[in-house]
Image 1 (cartoon, rainbow, N blue to C red):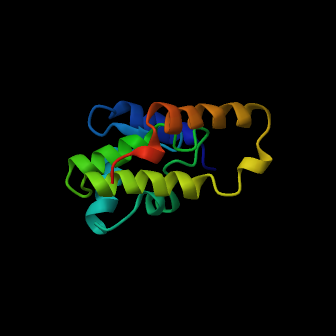
Image 2 (image 1 turned 120 degrees about the vertical axis):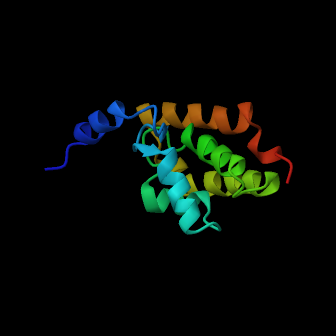
Image 3 (image 1 turned 180 degrees about the horizontal axis):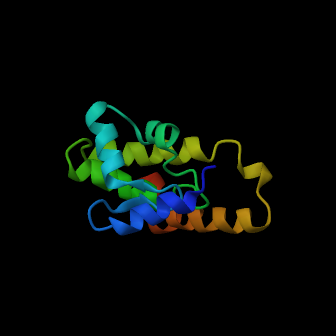
Length: 127
């Protein structure tokens, strides 16, 4: 049987060596950098499909920015590409979900909206 607690316990022992980018899906900086080194043209949405980055309860509300910043810092993305990747990720991630939100899921989506739109002003990032 697969129990996420086993992987979580293992990660906690080596947290200083490879920090988590996505706590929801236990994706580490090393995972993202390894994927980017294998395929440098990879987009954030490819990372979502490949390693579930941004598919947890926060729907990428925190880890997406961390991953984009890490890829920019390590030279995989320039500033314009980083901003475009963030916009593209958010558009693709929320496609078709707005009509079914309710209860706790609706509250979480409002938090993400506040982060993406009000705090970061994602729609007006420079290209």
